[in-house]
Image (cartoon, rainbow, N blue to C red; front, side):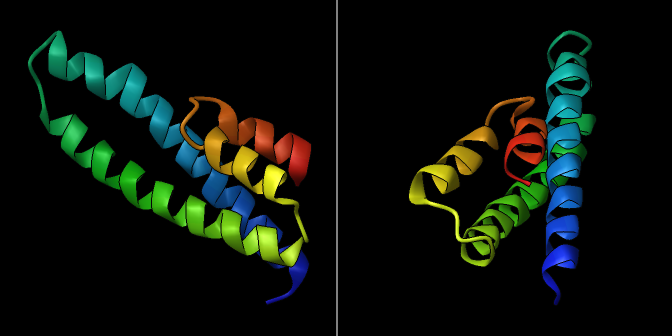
Length: 94
């Protein structure tokens, strides 16, 4: 896969991971704990989990492909657990 396509794919996964995290925190969790509707957490949680794993693997692939330092790699991985972190990664490192 060409470098540009790999970066574009990682950007897509990064955006989807960030959006799924925000939906989980801002919509699914209140539905579960305020209105006692846990179904949304199961669905969004599973999607977010898969996207999170893809994001971490993609970050490692970008580390190899773009010759990031270990500091950059760990910053990108840590940003995956912050609600708006992947958007920061897209602007700063991609």
